[in-house]
Amino acid sequence: DPITPLSHARAARRHPPETSSMASVTSTRALSASRAASLRGASHLKCNARAAASAPRRRRPNHAGKALAYFDDSSDFGGGGSGVDPESLAILQQRLGQRIDLEGEGAERLNKTADLLLDASGRAIDKDERRKVLKADEAGQAQQALEITYDPEGLFPEVDETSASMLIDKKMKAKEIELQKKEEEELRKEYEAARAELEAAREARTQPTTHDELVTYFFSTEFNEMEYEIVKQRPLLTDDFFAYLAARRDGESDEEEKGKLEALFTVTSNFVGFVDQTTSAMLSPLERMKKLLGAKDKKAMILEMVDNDELDLNLMALLKTNINTARQAGQEDAAVFMEKIYAACAKFVDGA
Image (cartoon, rainbow, N blue to C red; front, side):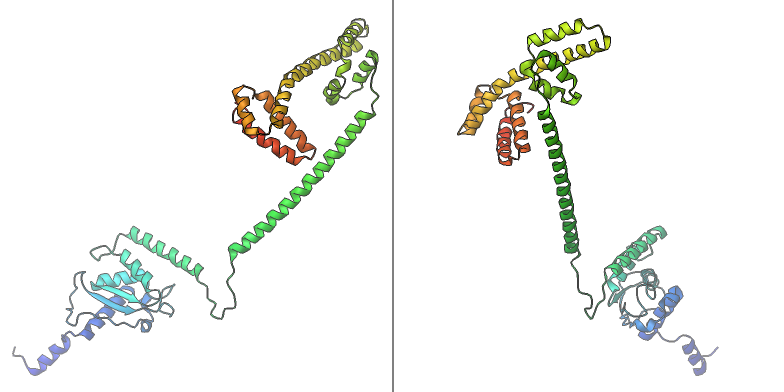
């Protein structure tokens, strides 16, 4: 059929020539087709797209094209729950076949997350991978929300929480130390009171002078005081006393009394042997300790005693005993002094 001006005009209306304005309309239609519901409020998205003026209407491959748009995160059309989201932006870029960079507050996060949702060719990544990316993005938004503080009028000044917590910890620690000192002081007073009571009871006892009185003395002694009393009465525990005790035991007809005499003989004789052996072993360390403590040059004396093989566990035990005794007597300076000597000697004594 011949083409008339009227049919030509109708064809022109059906197929108008493509312009840059039509490219924007095409982009808007594609956006509405993908996520129209999530893009309400588009008046806040001040689009300054710089798409090619002669862009064809057919779908273009994913390359080269780039558009810029202004994004206002503080408006109703924004990040946090309403408006543009990374997935919508990624779908729009895939449909248009070009990259869209948003500008404005909060846009950097959207651009970055949208890029992660597309592969190198511009197509959407796997569904499971998209979920991971979006989940990470949501976590980042939550963390950012927690860190934001809005106080334009400065009504709430910043507080150094670290210093405050350290101050609280310091006060609590000081209180604990104070309570611990009070408890230690109470325990010390209780110990001193019990010690004084024990010493008074020991001094109040009538001291034996004969073998028979000594046997009666031991029978009236509490079990936990036997070792102390045996050491105290060591000068009376002679061979004559043990002979007397054995004869009295053998001549006793009462089995219960005989058993008590046998037990006393065993305990006293065995412990006397232990005391004598310990005393003999400590006589030599005592002389060596006096020599060491009395030396002007302690280091030189220690080296000399090492050469002479005079440092042993017996000397170390005697030093430790003197340290404990000095500390119990309140002589802290003397205890600290002997501890330094002990530490210097311990380097040369195995097991010290």
